[in-house]
Image (cartoon, rainbow, N blue to C red; front, side):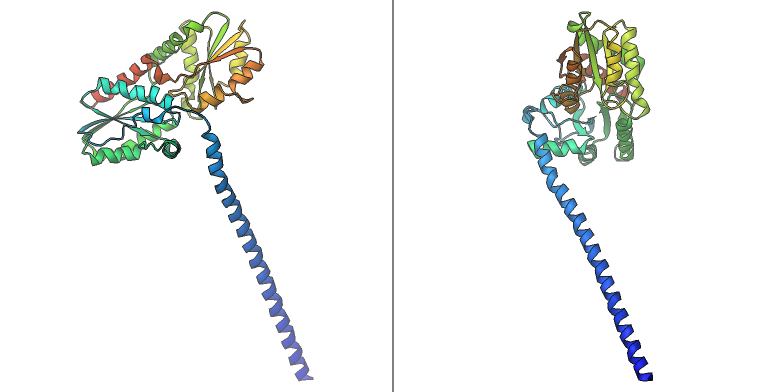
Amino acid sequence: MKNKFIVLMALVLVLALALMTACSKKEESKEETATTEENTEEATQEEAAPEEEEDEENYETGDASLDDPLNQDEIGEKELLVASFGTSFNDSRRLTIGAIETALKEKFTDFSVRRGFTSQIIIDHVLKRDNVSIDNVGEALDRAEKNGVKTLVVQPTHLMDGFEYNDLVEEISGRADAFEKVAIGKPLLTTDDDFSRVATALCEATKEYDDGETAIIFMGHGTEAESNQVYAKMQETITNLGYTNYFIGTVEAAPTLDDVMSAISGGNYKKVVLEPMMVVAGDHANNDMAGDEEDSWKTILTNEGYEVTCILRGLGEIPAIRDIYVEHAQAAIDSLN
């Protein structure tokens, strides 16, 4: 009887061990399946990305070879680094950022002017599509240090003192010890005088459309930062200067397109002119503003019954705007003394 009990217990133990082993293998199998599904999903997303990039590249942005990336060595002891967010639209990059850089070169002949972009996505896109290498800000600073630059002046082409500008200031400050003198210029819209001059430049550049029955709308980008208030201030400035047919809206903040449409609905406007209030006429201007998609500003306003004209011109194309950047760079240089 005792032997039978021992055999029975042994059988129970064997069965228990077999059951535990089976459960363990089942859990391992489930984990392997989940891992495989996760890896498959990641692989699918990675494979889809190039196809999406190819779709985005199916437009003509101009000849990249006409634009100077300003990434040369032999800088000398004094450098003026022009820091921009950047754009992959080649013609607009040359006519806006390139034009600002040229204005600075013509004014400050004792400085070597170089370029640095803050958007790595744009840098990578241009390199892959056009085989043109543009320095990011870190690479531009490395180049300056390697070339023995002693006096570094950085002039941003940013519109306002927002996230991008503050990140730039932080990056430059972190590398300041590599140079004997460092100064950073202010963004475009800094003082009340800047607002007044930019407002006048915008309105004068479009005065041929101001016939009393045309609403002239400038599209800004918009930001979550407190600096988004520059758009409301620009609207106030334009109105106070007597340009009553001019309106400001943003793509990603306030005032919205709905706000602008509400404002122009009170007038007897039959036509609308759209122009970006951005340094470059890039993706937002070409697609969100002037695109043929159903959610573009042009399409929405056309469906509202307006005759719509789009001007694909970045702020950098306007000489009076470039003059302000030159003056801000001059102030930065003066601060070194």
